Amino acid sequence: MGAVTIKHVAKEAGVSLQTVSRVVNNGPNVTDAMRERVRAAIDKLGYVPNMAARRMGGSKSYLLVAFNDRKPTLEKWRAGRGSDWVAQMLLGAIPRCERDGYHLLLELLDGHSAKLHQKIDAIISSLRPDGVILTPPHSQDRSIIDQLEHRKVPYARLSPGEDDERGFRVRMDERQAAVMATRHLLDLGHRRIGFLTGSAEYAVSTERLEGFRAAMADAGAAIAPEWVRQGEFSFESGIASADALFALREPPTAIIASSDEQALAVLHRAKDMGLDVPADLSLISFDDTPPIAFSLPPLTAIRHPTAAMAERAAALLIEGHGLDMPPSPPCTLPFELVVRGSTVPPRR
Image (cartoon, rainbow, N blue to C red; front, side):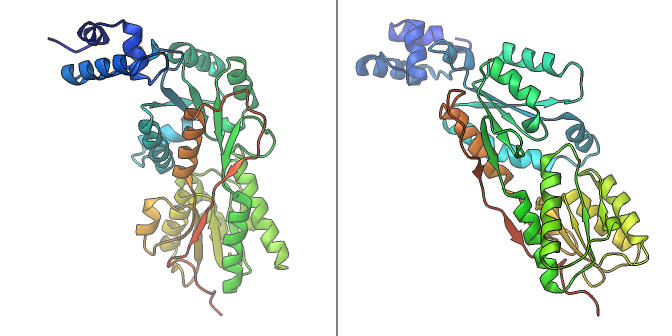
């Protein structure tokens, strides 16, 4: 016998194809005796249900789709740097899907493409997913949310910002995380603190900058305009921002970077300039992906709960929370400031 199919199981158990599918899906309207016969046939034949067979028993596809930002993801992969954020997202979502027999598919979307909504329609029509996980900046895109609601596809939004309360929202308090990072440096005695923002497209960039400004204001510490550098989350952006800050007559004694790649770029450029981290420059990063713990020195960082956020988003969709649920407060997961060897008091 070749590959075992649902038809083989139905024939072995003497039941219909739909009955086999109901058993596979733990569906209703099947007697205990019938369920046992089908399971015995599955065990005997070594049948592994595929998605098409499972779909026969009901409307579920047992598939979730995650929409991720195309351009930065591909840039990192092509540069051989991977994407630790994507890895953490998959680490959280895939095991949660597996627990209930679901599959997760990653799709890369260009939010600026004229064919964005055409592509989303094609994905929904061909795959019929049970839900969509929106990662930033797509989680903030009202047109994507409108489209999913029009197609009646449940969705969960990671780091969605605060302007749109629709759907299930899973986040960490980015503003408070920036406050904590800034206060750590202030408590060490730093007053000239630089801040590297991420892409303006992402709500987290604004929230983190707001937290930095609030903490500095609370401490009565002034912020020179040139200490705040608008950029991207990339290594290249970190290099450009570091060059600008180190060229100042009075450069910052500490820097907060909005991503690990930015922070590694600052560390790289500091060494090029003959600066010692942390003796000459304290450095804090956001995300706390694995390279940060193994840099020299290991970097103090805000540990972003990306995996836990993705796991929670998948759980909300798997548990059947759909579009008919009333608006609810966002699910806010805890972060952590991991203090390592890159932050010390400034030189006197």
